[in-house]
Amino acid sequence: MATNYNPQGPEKETTNPAGSMGEAESKQGGYIKKAQETMEEIKERVEEQVATVKDQVEEQMAKIKDRVEETYEAGKTKVGEMVEGVKKNLPEMRDWSLEKVYNDSIAYIKANPDKGLLISLVAGFVLGLIFRRKQT
Image (cartoon, rainbow, N blue to C red; front, side, top):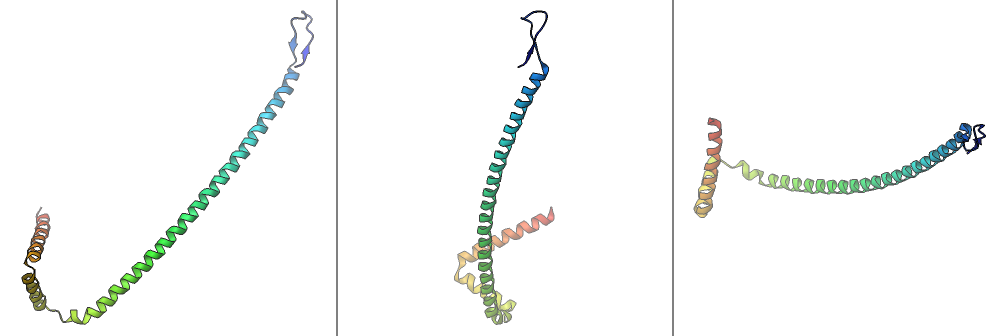
């Protein structure tokens, strides 16, 4: 720090403002440089983290894509099997009539009275719910 001679006495020296400005500027320059270095370090860390997250997202997307493709293929196969089953049973279904359905139902109920009773109870309950809702 630069000091000037003061005619009022040796104990009363004054500080040179120009001298302290140079020191302040050099300190300020040091702070700026350190801040820039810190910002560069932060930028590098963020870039590394972004790259890591990007890789993880791409990996998960690839797994999801594989699962979707597997599910699509399984569904496609299942629908194909169902269509083939309907095609096989279509001639028999054309011969169905109300009388045939009635006779088959009676035969099933006679063979399985407990299941027939349960089915009729469930059907009555569902019909009761449907008609009760329409009345309110």
